[in-house]
Image (cartoon, rainbow, N blue to C red; front, side):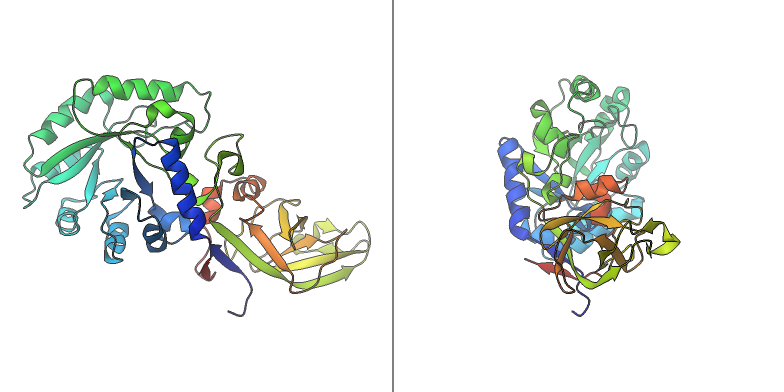
Length: 356
């Protein structure tokens, strides 16, 4: 590995965060969200590290097959269900569970001939207004699934829209609507995402579905990951590849927008938007050099960023942390006008991943 940029994945932190979920929702089973390549952390790697989880959730059948062929034997749930009736052959072959969120998926199941009935999750739209059966249609869809020979156990799920804001009343309304439309209907239930797990104990039900909190980022507005007892899993590390002694008035980077206010040292870091560092990170975004915060200066380039090294001694080869241990990803994300989810998912294929 010649270029110094790398993404370190700390599996002990991943397992710590899973235990944080168990502590917060001790009476619920855990369906861990590892879609989108486990939020950029490596799907198979994460699934094997989280072998104590009760199930795994993915977005597509391709993700599910990759997981199963990696040796995972825990239940795998397709959160978006199937996209055609033909996929039911693969669902059966790999023993997958399905979310059902529209009448077309119900019709595909009604027309299917499968040797073993499937576990399905009827997804009800209680206010997210993305995927799901309308609450007033939930009972009818349940009855159709109940009468369907391809369906065995029927479970129920919904998804919160504003659980990251504990003061938003929509979460309580969603919980109530979910309970009302399923009144008297037996079946396991799942409502809580990461924010619901930590801020809405009444939503835990039979299953919780942690995502971002597993990877050590805060799911709640105004709360830090450390304050919530979470540990960062990914640390994007690099090194200084040059330290330039520039003069007052010298400009730095594309567009010559940042100008040195005095004679000063400027550090050049291997890592840019070609690696997944956010191109729109603002000047002043924190970077750690030898454990000390320094500000980003100039525009982010494809392969490099530049930092202000005034007030510290630094040399080429010194360690740099772009986010992770000592520098929360959500803080860097906020400086780039995005969220930690996107930082994790956008680390590119040319960055080597190293398990710590």
